[in-house]
Image (tube, rainbow, N blue to C red):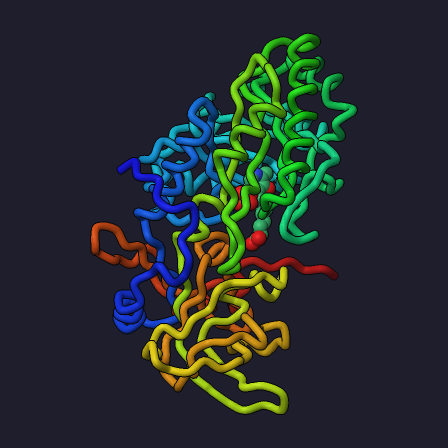
Length: 422
Ligand code: LLP
């Protein structure tokens, strides 16, 4: 199916009866992913960037079922850890479709990556530090290398997701061409890479353009002094609107402005969107378990919390929220929607108007497909939620609910591994 569909899928577009049935069948909290919507998002990207290499940033959602949909759509992957590379390999991506971006990589990650690289030398490794290059060389690596540039241009929906101007990421722009010249003699130098940040909106597009312009200039310099590059990767970060009234990013405009800003380079454009592919393909369903009148508000307690969906607690992120059990005639009321975690930041929304809830109602939280399940934790000894994926009118469990017993499988009481410090 190549229908690229509407540019954004709002919470209201989901079939609420089906969602309520899924909550009843699989229990809550429950992530629901619509495979067809992932396909549509892939198709829209392929349509807007026909000549580019598109790499899906797995960190947005690394579940096997989703990865297989993306693999079949013909999109490659960008992985931020050995674990993500393992997930990509398991989903059937060949090494030539995998780019591993090493971010201060632990030795354990590098060892695993090098093992995979020995099997498939088409794997590309992106490095953001000269030190990482040395560590790769110590392990015998002389393959496909890409340099992560710190372009000193950042963007994004929150300061915590701005990467382009953050010293943790990449090699300073000014130093890259010299290092490229050296590394081109030691490796197969295939590309340069930069990522401004995450959640770039229409207003941020000029920062994205500035980054791309710098990357174009750098690519031309490197081509002259170090030889030709295969690709210039200008990162991901394309935002999706979380609020009902926010306009969607016009991906064709992004594509056009990206190509213009890059200018003529003797290399293929590459992009790495994560959120754009999966965000609006997912909703989180949670059940109301407690309703109470507090001093200033009515608190609606639900069974999902910051351990299920961290974004509101971590970035003050806004997600659409609806009571999908209520009848259309139910009056709305402003409420605070809170989770079961013993932390005051465990709040999904305050002063939010939803159809008056009663205990047992199902609350749907929209645009939860990206950085939702991926950032779930087991804090407060709370098992991670289940996830279902539906396709062709069939919903099946993609990630089963974690059990409480599984939370202590790592506990050991024996002296199996101990050391005497005296
Ligand atoms: N490439 C690199 C090198 C990245 O670091 C990222 C995201 C991406 C691509 C994909 O960015 P996207 O297209 O998904 O915006 N947890 C945060 C987002 C953190 C993103 C980190 N890097 C959130 O929930 O908003």
